[in-house]
Length: 110
Image (cartoon, rainbow, N blue to C red; front, side, top):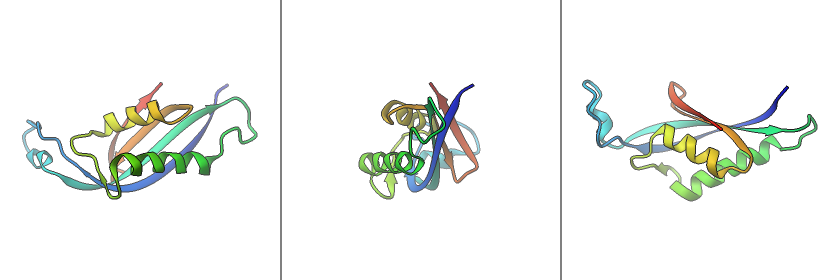
C-alpha cells in the first residue's frame, strides 16, 4: 500500500506558446491569462502527518511566486514543464499536476 499527501493551490499567471502551429489555436502564440490549478503529491511512510498539507501547499506557492512573481509570468513555460519543475524542486514530491483554469492540464509522476 502507498500513502500520499496532496496539496493544491490556485495562482494567476500568463504564458504563451510562441511556436504554436496548430490550426485554430494560433492565439496561443501570444501571452494569455489563466488561473493555474496546481496539485503536488508527496509519498509518506505512515499515516500520522509525516508531511503537513498546509506546509506543503505553502512551499509550492512560495516556489512559484519566487520563481515567476505574482501574477506569474511563465513566458513560454508549458503546464508540462511547470509540473516537471515542481516534481524536481519540491522536497519529496512524487507527482504534480498543472491545469489551466481547471480545464486542461498536465501530470508528471516520478
